[in-house]
Image (cartoon, rainbow over all chains, first blue to last red; front, side, top):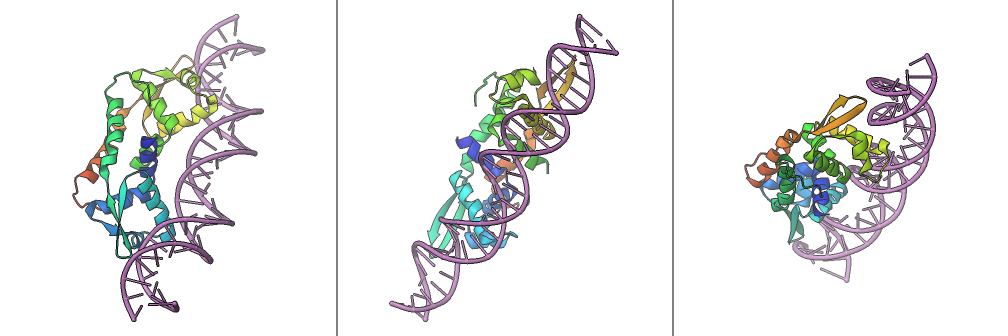
Length: 93
Length: 93
DNA sequence: AATCTATTTCGATTAATTTCTAAATAGATA
DNA sequence: TATCTATTTAGAAATTAATCGAAATAGATT
C-alpha cells in the first residue's frame, strides 16, 4: 500500500511543487500556502496527504508547524521503476 | 505536462499491474483483460491512458491489438525524483 | 483570562476518475 | 456478403479527489 500512497501523492502538481519548495529548506504551513493560489485549508489538505505518504515530516516550533522533505520514501518507487526496465519477469505488485 | 501524465498513469494500481505484465512480453488487449476482475471496456480505458502517457505502444496483428511496454518514458520521473534528493535549490516544476 | 495567530478539521460543492452496459468499428473467416 | 471475433467508443452511474468557507484547536501574547 505504501507505493500506491507515494505515487498518488506525487501525481498531483500542487503536491509536487510543495515538495520542490521543501527541497530548499523547511517552511511553515502559512509560508507554503502563500505561494499558491489556493486557500490555506486546501494547502493543509495537501500537506496532510504528503504527511500520510511519509514524504514530509512536521515539526512544531512556537505556534508554527514547519514541514520538512523526506525523499527517502522514494526508494520503493525507484526500485519499481527500475524493475520494469530490467525485464526480470516478476509479475507481482 | 509529460511528467504529470506519466505519474497519473502509474498512480493507479491496475495500470501498474498492466505494466508489470507487459514487462514480460507483449499481450493482446483481451489477454490482458482476462487477468483482471474488470470488464474489457474498463481495461481498454486503462490501456488508452497508458498509451496516451507513452508508457505502452500498440501493434496491430490480425484482428488483435498487441501492447508493448515502453519504460523509457520514466526518464523524466527519475530525474525529478533524484533532483529532490540532491538539494540543488531548483524551485521549478 | 482574554485575545491573537497559525493551522487544522468539518461539511458542502464541484470536478475528475473509474467502472459498467450497450453500441460501434474493423479486420478475419465462412 | 454475412457473420464472427477482438477491441474500442459512448454515455451513464458510482466513487474518489480537490477546493472552499466557516468553525475548531492550540500555542503565544497581552
